[in-house]
Image (tube, rainbow, N blue to C red):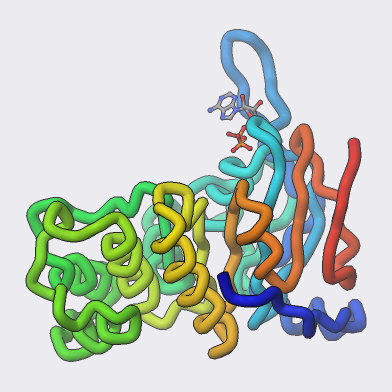
Length: 248
Ligand code: ADP
């Protein structure tokens, strides 16, 4: 694995607020069902600035998926203010949110979610299509960035898990989104491919990309420039602190 980023220097609060690509103020997400109401995320307040690589960690049931769904604009808070790239997403219509998501977020999923009957190149071009216009040369360049020039014509079933994840990263990068949101990006990979994907994420971070990554893997988490830990739906995070540990 690449070495950990040790250059995290806390920014003054005001500078952080001005540079924030993600900011949460007292964000709560409740689920109400027949068994009552569950507070999956409780009054979360923190910000993530451009260029940070943040690892979100926590035990099962602590609210990681809930938080990722909110940050990925796949869901909206029950209460509180969530700003993505300066925009309050709470009042957006579902179609506006779809459009916003395509522009702002590049998703990297544990399960890859590639379309099985499309080639690697076509999978990347599909993300271009949903964003604006397809451009095969740009899509090829994105595959080249992740070292897959020679696999552009392969179907996902003809690729290893590591190669599929690299296609997923190329797809996430293709529209230059301000945020890369990775959900257990190495969770389905063997050690060799974990190392390759960790190296790619480190490279993307070094190039200035903002990466928000949920991970169970302490080694992956240690590569990030900051950690946000969740427990029982609560985040304890001093915005200027490079590493955060929390207890309920
Ligand atoms: P994690 O991803 O860390 O495992 P989740 O965000 O999935 O945690 O879940 C946080 C809490 O919210 C858990 O107690 C879970 O049971 C509950 N939860 C998640 N989704 C729903 C839902 N749709 N309806 C009711 N409760 C939910």
